[in-house]
Length: 96
Image (tube, helix red, strand yellow):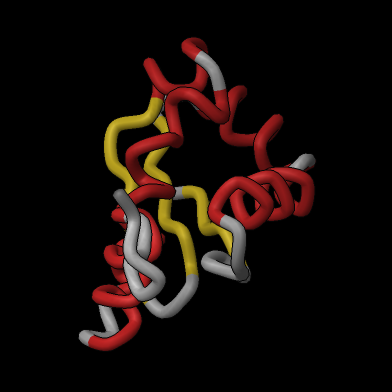
């Protein structure tokens, strides 16, 4: 039986992340985790390193052809990432 002041586990974890100011870092980690799912197998297989610093996503791609294709659709990738995360996690992408 649920009491009036009970909250769900999801709400509790959300409050915990906000109180300890970990929400931003948690969102950044989730972006790195869902990069292969978001970009597909072809891009994920050619991605050697991915990290976030100061709201910039740094991605090392070993194929210059894939890198040029991704440069052309950079704004769309940023939009997809932020939609998936539910907030503005990324403002720019740097392909290395």
